[in-house]
Length: 289
Image (cartoon, rainbow, N blue to C red):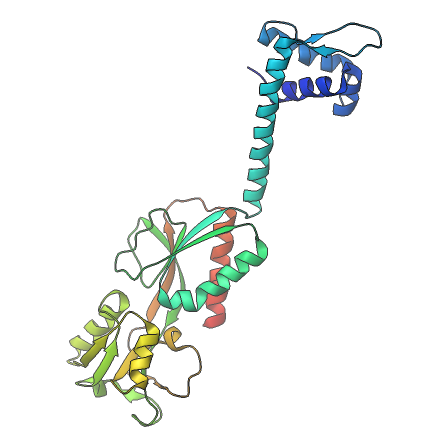
């Protein structure tokens, strides 16, 4: 078995042409260098250096040249591995994050900016999907609007309350009674994820809005409200920016808020980059809340 320290000594002797100079370069005694080369020669089965004696430099043998060539390659790979480990510990690695539309527009940019500032060499991969059933295959972290089963760990980031979004003047200022939604034309997201929870909540109370248009896009939803197609029930983060063309109303009683979580596979060890992303997400959510 060839040890890296022995191969490093071989390379030093070959470079310096002298056991003594190699010893000074490596911080060893000359006898230690001689012992390490002797171990290599025993392992290789022959002499690695011709030793003419006196002031003449030692010269690599043909067998030594073979060992040296492969030894330098092993040393190079070991250096690359050490460098890769150090960069990994510093956060310059890859992270795969699952997300959904609202988070992509609000929380996630703050997380990405923080990761880029702290780890300029990191590789960030994003995957956006609206789904009822989160699939964390191949992902380090995933933003999701709900809890999941025991195979997935979660961190609750914030509650995202629902508002009634309408054109200014369509409703009196202030909260709107929940029963006003019965028969009301509404623009809505598809009945998946937390939208399904909201609609079930209304249905159990005998409130049946008239859903006139469904869209996955938050901007399309708000555009249809501005156009007068109907009002909308939207999470606060979907209408976070100030917009004088829209009026936002609380509902009484309120709808169950959408809970936003950060998920990861249970029992998984986080990379330093993923651990930092979790802390950034926690802080971004606290700022928004």
